[in-house]
Image (cartoon, rainbow, N blue to C red):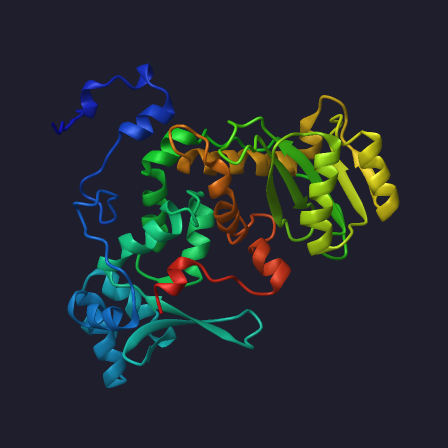
Length: 362
């Protein structure tokens, strides 16, 4: 038996509910980017159907394409009576180009040495893109800024920022899992480094439910001050031997030996085993102030984000979290970091990595 629940918001007293519950209950039926699958069937993207849709399914974009074919920009008197969306593209007509029948926005780099092409997305593909970049395991249910950054690297459309903000704020999973953001008390000070992985931070996240692979914790290691690249490694226990072995196997052998490593005063990090490992490898070991996790705030924030992403995808029994963690870390590392202005992937590799939404675009 299918039950349809309808909530009349006017009958609910706001003061009786937390902000999180109100966000879950609130819905809009008048917006173009609803997450209800019945409102708009998902359309996958490839070059053929994008070109066809730009011409036939989107009246506005088809007008712009015709202008580009005619190689003429209408005067203001000809477009003044048209919709705000047409005027939006008209004002940017010089940056729009046709390539193999598809309309793109040409975006030059700051130094003018290269440019990127962003597909001008028809309206009936918006839901697919938003779902791929936000709702999937490689999207990670990250926030508005990170989701918008990924989309801006690939697509362009009218009111893109508003659509992304609406999609993320109306996401049921995000509303139920995430706490309201708090403003920092004061700006953080910079710690200067010269290269990736010179100084890294390490912390243990858990205990988590014991997984089917017998893992209970995550060892979180972060390139603390340069690329913000973060590794989350499932481990069965927090014994010093386990932590030291995984650190060498999964960090040192891939990224090399750091100059410095920062941790809290957990017994595993203060153990003779871990200290001896640092001495052998020539690593300078530092630690936080006792009972002050804020002194390792960057990795603590990463832990919080990882927990939120995991909670959005694990099954009800919560024993499959270590099967999702690697793809979720792809979502995390390919997202723009606020203090960098770019993603950890871009900082470390010099380029953005491909995501499923890129492969679906051909």
